[in-house]
Length: 223
Image (cartoon, one colour):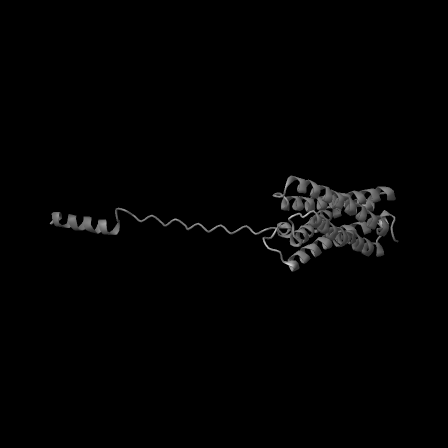
């Protein structure tokens, strides 16, 4: 009898405790989410096609960012000075885009440079956006400096330095895009185009400096 019970017991034990337990399933890894572009990257990104409304929005955002630097400069005198500086800091960018950029496009066209109006327009919009970003980044430091400076000349010098640096960065961006567009052009044409963009840069600096020194109260302009 014991011999008959033993196999039955062994069978029950084997049924209740399987020899090869099933391992728990490994968790399914989540798919990596695509990285979203930052606001700065989206503002400066070069699109494969030209859309006038998109470039206009980009240009307007650059002007709005530049206006924050004007607000910072207006903190020295307050009141009406906030509005004057906020309006006239971006006005130089508008003047360069309205007067200088069309002249640059015409001059490059006279050289038969292979660059179209869409490339020039988008390059100038990105240059304005880049200038505005730099000015917005310098705005907190500029506000602190112009408010705490005892001498008006020191505050004016600091304000001018920020405007000069931001303007040069914007011009460098525009010149780089023009050079990239003419990369496949003959060497002589690239040289003439480089001289043309250099002349445009000098004109842009002179025009912006004239506007800022004539209109910004901190720099001795309209009060």
